[in-house]
Length: 619
Image 1 (spheres, rainbow, N blue to C red):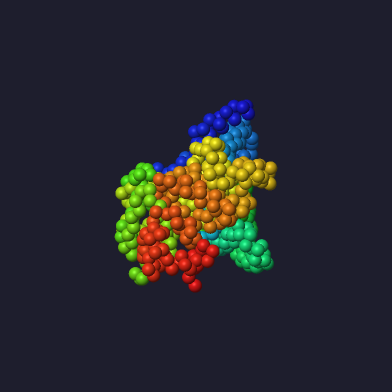
Image 2 (cartoon, one colour; image 1 turned 90 degrees about the vertical axis):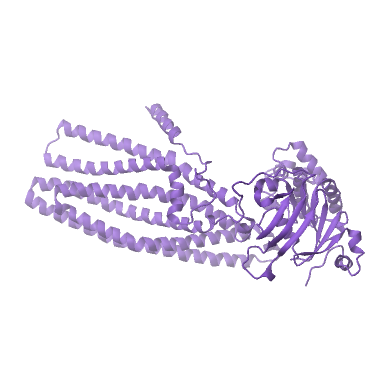
């Protein structure tokens, strides 16, 4: 029997299984930013399991009312004939089957998958936000909202069907039976129902509002704790542990206060409903007493049916109250998540965007009358670039020099489409980068930044990130070219994993700055894209490592179009061309030797101002 049941359950599961790695039919270019459309957007993707839950819950609710009616009929007939007994057995059997089906829909079909389906789609959408999106908020806060919104939406929809729909069906069926027995007998339950709905109408919005505030406090607290743990090093070095502790305590106090606001509102609602439940029981018993006095056996039968019904209604009232409060609490979390997670993408691919296909001989770069100001609605004098022009032939190595704020990093950020320009165009190989897909654009560009970003994964996974299909031999060869192979072999993590299998810790905290940088450079070597951007790529290295890396970089720069930003001007002497920038404009353009010999030249002045090979920052 159990094998047959298991077989049928598995067969049903195959038909109703929800694949979490699916996208909506209309695509995921945007998400609804209002609560009801947002919930419906995901609910309609799992409509068949939801229909199954609604049908089985409705049937189960009606069966409970029918069983109370059945008790009344037994009392009315004053005899237990075979037909009535078999009817009771049939009702119990049907109730068992319907209840089992409802549990299957809940526990095997809906609950395990829907939350992660929502998470998967929210992650897909959020991961494609612009760089500015992630720079303007806590990563921990964004992650918390994503992870929290998905199960909250799942549970809100489930509770709406499993409790509200169930309660409505059960109450409607009860009222139908009671009205047919005697109108007076149905009156207390009808009045109680109106009062119950009114209490929910008064209190539940307060619960939702305070739950939203509590959820926001929770997200802020999570973001603060993650931020503190992520920046453990400066906290220790600056002896600011007590300072961070005070910040967390302040947020915990705020979290406790908002949480008490939620629990206090729920307690008040519970107290009022308990009073109403007591009055309902007294009123129903009083009407039943009158019916027994006036109708005799028929009154006893009606009362035998009515009292269990109202008892069940009062028992369920607390459950429904908590379920409804939970629904609005969950919807509050969803609403809070919507504000961040549904933001429109700042940088998007055009519908007819094509993949970029250039090689080392055709990877020239052109900025054509580019105007840009990081999206600020401000005056013209706040523009970073105003009709900026630049052409870099394929294979040319260009150094960018200038004080902070001159526009050097903005050039590289615009080139990889971290932002879109307000006007003008940027072309690679003669193609406007706004008309090609972001993924294909970035596949053709390798970026080595001042800080090497590492994942909390193995060394080999971090290097292989530049070329996922690379063999272990290719990874090792890249590490050797980046002067990283020797120190990698000596690594061991806290689980005993060694060498290339050792994990580096969150953001590579187990490695020195120079070691992280060399792994990042090994990753760039492995990617081997036709365009190479070096943003202070050797600034974190000691002199010995820098010399080795400079040699390696010279090798990988061959035949590539290179943009190199450096304050250490000596690292740019090997460039074919050096651009000196000031306030978003190119004020000098030439080789190192040409620029250093310009009378009163800006580059020559900077070269002479250097101390230890570094460009001094403006005061």
